[in-house]
Length: 63
Image (cartoon, rainbow, N blue to C red; front, top):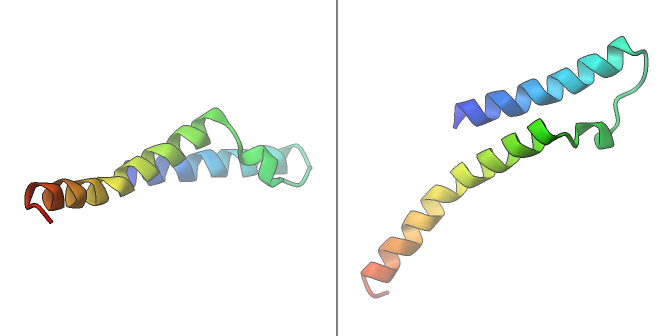
């Protein structure tokens, strides 16, 4: 999971650095890039794994 966080952090950092180097303020809309979106969804998918396993176990146990 740390790999997803690392990509997310690197993506945000690169956007902020690019804005700073260009002499402008970074806006939330600048953070919507392909790389950051993919990293966000990767982290979200990994976070869902325990929930999915819990659902599978409860279905198998008949609860």
